[in-house]
Image (tube, rainbow, N blue to C red; front, side):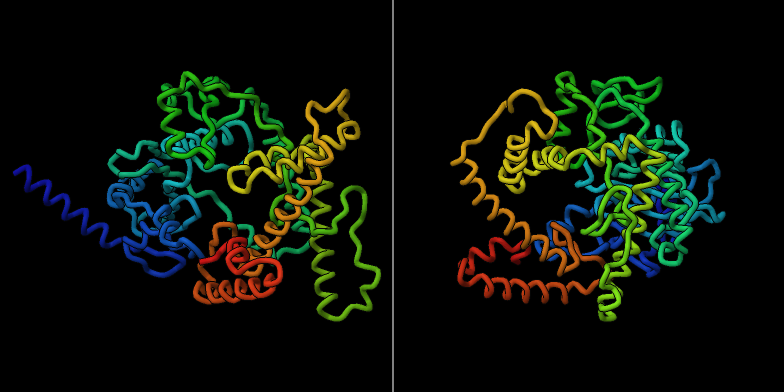
Length: 445
């Protein structure tokens, strides 16, 4: 009788899940497509990249958890797949019309269990200590041995629409008001002071790890950045007593321009009003359009710069610390990927400008003229390599991993990649062999 009841329950759940509409970008998808990565393609090593983003889980159980989330139980009738580069995000609509978001991290999102627990801690902290409308967490698990079979967070769907959907429709005065409000929100985050660098966790969720208490419910524990591998996370969990959290990450490494407000290349900081070029009237129509676009972007960037001075002075000061200090930290993190040459360039620049950068005494390290000459040749080679990387990414509308957005034709992009590589090999014929030129190209596949 017991086995019969269990069998009947499985049949009922199968029938219920079969009635759920599964969608992605408005089109019906299968359950397997829900698990797979479908938010674009990759120019090289695609199968490996797709495998890293594939996530299988018990959809029936996830629907059960989501159905009761938020205190009003109602079965899930529609699931719309909203996918990022590192996590599955599902918009789950209930029969009563209410919606919740389910977020499930892929293997590449960060250290196992820490990533989910940290996100929950951050959301709780931001909701409690700022006015930023962070979503409420209804249910979550950082243990992938749970009945769902994967880590997950069920959270409320916050009100609003993506900014990119409205930005082009907004009047300039509306954009300026938005920028002002944005800097006010950023000021709340910049005003928070932490005693250590790491991730935020709920105290009760990380009792097995060495953490530094922040307040009664939140503590600072291990960083869950993607630079930590799964193996690193295992080391953290078994040797937590050896962890030593250093000072918090300096603000000047975090303060930066929002992507959509980033100034154009020739932008001048400070009390300088953006203007059209002096020869604007002599430009052709294409040149005028480009100049107007740059002028418009410069005005928005200036609005952000001024608003940051007024609302978030500490972040403005951090953004104006000499570039070489920011680059020094960035280059340290890139050594395993691009080598030591760009880091050495920063060290030489600091060595050469020790006094003008405000330091007293002598620089604790030095470079001989011979070492600097050798480095200059190596750095020129690095710059040539980096220029090729940036050019290829720009021409192919991609990033360092070769990701192609889903709305673009992947086969056309692969054809363009082959054509560009062929042109590059021909262009470098007098300087490099075909194999050497191919080795410099970021997507040689």
